[in-house]
Image (cartoon, rainbow, N blue to C red):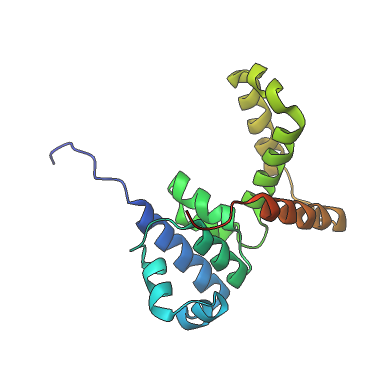
Length: 161
């Protein structure tokens, strides 16, 4: 053993594993997803294999085609856990977090500058500790998610340069 840690996976490898996990979780073929994304099969296969650069438009189109969470796909890459995308596909956890951050930013604005890391860490870890204690669903929560997801989509930059 040389003591040198292995190279971490590339972004494309992580996204590929996440996309495959979600597609398989949904029981879909590559051809079905490509068609739902209105994309040539070969283009989809390159996307799914991680051969292309991270493409937010493709990620959002994939999520729409598979009724999964686009932000969970992105976070799966960021946190190095492709399975996070599959685990969050149904409950849309990452979308919920993104909506909450967007609304918090819109509300607090520059007061965010005054929040110290200790306060933020306590608040976020407290939220996750609460989640470990139970999970509840309600129509109000589904409505909140639907409205927030529409707001995120409305403010998302359009694809292209």
